[in-house]
Length: 295
Image (cartoon, rainbow, N blue to C red):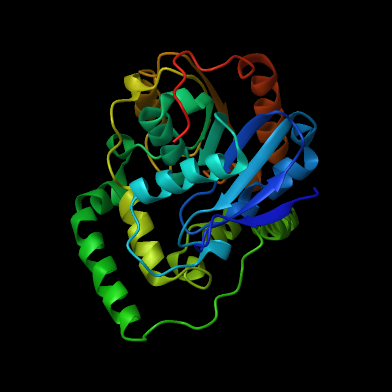
């Protein structure tokens, strides 16, 4: 994949741009991740032939490291500014986990800028079970902890070096280890461990991102856009049947469930790519029903 890394204005936000198509596809990563989450899919697909693909490192993550207050509204503003900078009026927008929730929030905030949605494992707090449901109840503690961490950063207490995690390489190594008999433990150690995540992400960004991941979503029936929803059979992050009932409120959607624990990019890269390519070919060419001027 030939890609160019661009900076959004003069700020810390960076994004990858590839492809030559007249339509825009924006892909968002999840919590404690970065834009390389989508590198394998874009590189192995035909998307670059038909789409201008924009993959940001959300403010606070990856190449966009910053130690400042972070909320979903800040990330949404960055996405709108990125489209403006590229001269793009609208897009299909997709994301994984936290990124899926942000894509849905963007469609609710600026429906005229969205042709369609790709929601890979969106986080629905009402469907969470077990320890994660308890974590939702403790969400109110995360924001003050994040502010405390930002205060420590302000007086100079922060890590000077954070390596950039290449998730395409990590996914490939993980598949090799699983094929060699490592089992699901390989997944949980590498993708489900906060200690592993914090090797690459500022603590302040992690805490604030987790708070936003657990933030309840507005009503799903307010998203009047065609949506592809990709879910996992695994119940690690919630009850699948409850999740499907809640997401059934989306007015125009297709749900596909894949044999995966949660990390579909790592576990099922080929079905992920094929389903996205097929859905885009059939659903995303139409213009938004209620266009708005660019902001």
